[in-house]
Length: 467
Image 1 (cartoon, rainbow, N blue to C red):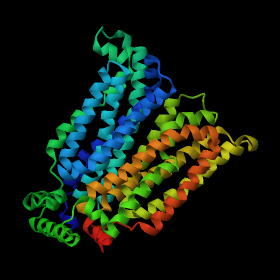
Image 2 (tube, rainbow, N blue to C red):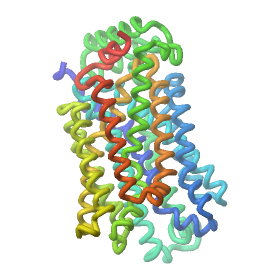
Image 3 (spheres, helix red, strand yellow):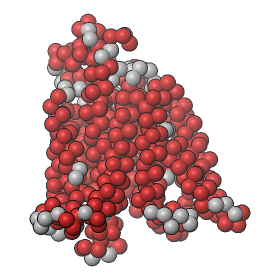
Image 4 (cartoon, rainbow, N blue to C red):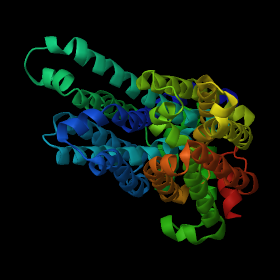
């Protein structure tokens, strides 16, 4: 079976779907470089600043609620087309928004696109992959997200420098307006280029074969799987397996199948690890890194420089995770990575509580900070979308991932809102201690309730929950 797999073709399809992850990462991270400029231009108070940052998260929640339905109703490929259009419209709208209210609308549209791709892209990759490569291929999505983060940091840095040094040489017109006078428009709007590219390349990928089987379009599913396996007989066998599991699950669709005890358990477990993962400090580190660095005594450096370092470590570690996730296994990666996260979170907490008394240098905190990012990127960040994309039955995969995605984005929103309060009221030391404590229930749930899915087909995983 391994020799018959057309890995180049599967990798191409996975990379195309993962472009949605890049847009997700860019659209999420680019906001950090525009807050001061937008706040100054539109005279925003602290509440309006929070709404400017958080409105895209509200859009993301809307997107995950719609994404699963769109994926199940229209197909994974058409849902990705919709997301690409949303990203392109949002980018153009942000670049030319005439006022703050219109800018908010534009960001919400982009947030809906984020929510849709966060569900559909990993689902599509998972459904087209073969068991022995599925982990690393779905991890390409998370890698694309981290590249999007890093890309946003670099674009913010480059465009800001250009606006200060060379932008004044641009002739009067919209280019000077976007890339010099109000450069935040360029930062937000430039994502329209990869969004349009994403829309174009989607024409070159097929629909998910498992969705086609679900809709009764067996001949089209066989055609896709024949290209995947380079064998019509193997493709027919795979279609038969998918049909067999579908029959054993009954013809129930969506919410009705959620009443099944095993399926309901899978959905609750997925939602639990999705929301708990956000309270282990992941997004607090990515969103509020500069503030935390300033608290540690590293304020003399450029905050954008430290953001780039964090983004670079995130990308390089995710690349490593892509190569080891199918060899080490999902659960073992979680055990190793989360254990290391607890260790470094405790060290960071100790630094903030007793660092000055015992003479710890600021570089100690920076090293622990980057080690935490490494531990997180190689474990929960790489594993979460792989697990969510493969642990649900085919009949309800879209709806179930919407439930888990909703939990994840609600957690992200809460962490984004609560972190500033925690840093002030619990102090940075207490905040990182809380993050360390929150790692424990996550580890217990994965240990006791999540099955090891490495090397298993989606149909084998489905049988685990149904029977």
